[in-house]
Image 1 (tube, rainbow, N blue to C red):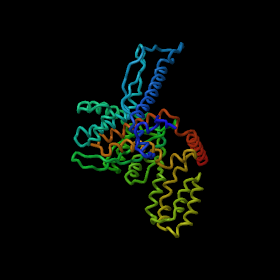
Image 2: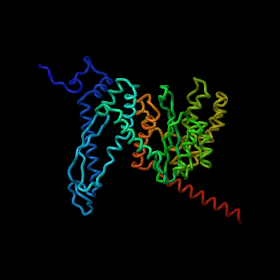
Image 3: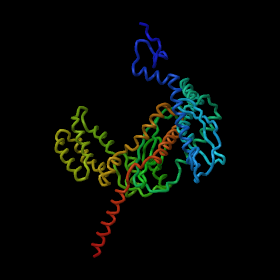
Length: 422
């Protein structure tokens, strides 16, 4: 019987003989030109459909629709290139007769891509890169860069990101979350050291998350965090009721000095990590599991009862840990004074996890930034993209329970004052 000579799948593109592993298959898929071309076609179709929807919204009518609400008429298409991780794709962009339609698709999609490319290119033109970096920049952008073109691209992007970073805060943010991550940056002398990327998030009364600030500092300190918070206040930050952060001493001092009267919630995840410093290496795992279980209690009273039981169970075996927990755990239970539906979102800084993961994914490609400006540029570009996504998404929290709680507290306070005056 004659065997079928037709090949399908990866074998048709020359995979290694003798079988192929899952990792090899993934590598083949990433390198295969056919696979990349297919992905580019999918992306092109998606982006063009998005442009058509935006045009319909701008004109008040979809393509071919007859309606009295129409504000203008289409006038064909023009071609526009979009640089992506998959290479350059050409899009048919709709246009109208009177120029009513203006899309943000290109600028918003490419904002962080421009920052990443700029960082890589700066490494290349400054002579501190490798041939691999040059290959990456050419693959991302389709051509090499001159110093003048890099300078123009960087200047335009920096101006846009500076406007984002210095915008006025026009509304109240009852919840603010502060945290930092570290990136490796090369200084003017060529020495590589860590820099702190300080991030502030806020939740407004609509329950939507927003990126309030992204700043770069030599390290976390009372001065660097104080500068960030004071900058937020100058831009209009107000109405803060709760601040969530870790237990960094400089950050704590900055909060106490600049945000007096707010409730401080110490991140319980950081707290549990800190607890490991007070345990022997081969400690009983059920000890930390029991400590973590306290944070599943729905009220402060139940959490304190659970804490008492935990202390009685472990104080003899781990006295150092139990003494430390007893002295510090109250700082991590502030969230229990908030509406119950807000507990899981406000007991830690995990809200920043999405932002930190995306920063890590992008900065991992650069590894060592050529200077502080490129590090801040990419960090802010990623943050501004996520900020835009959050604005358009469904609200993160229902703030009605907090409004009701504050209303009840105000009523109770007035009743108490009336009884005293009587």
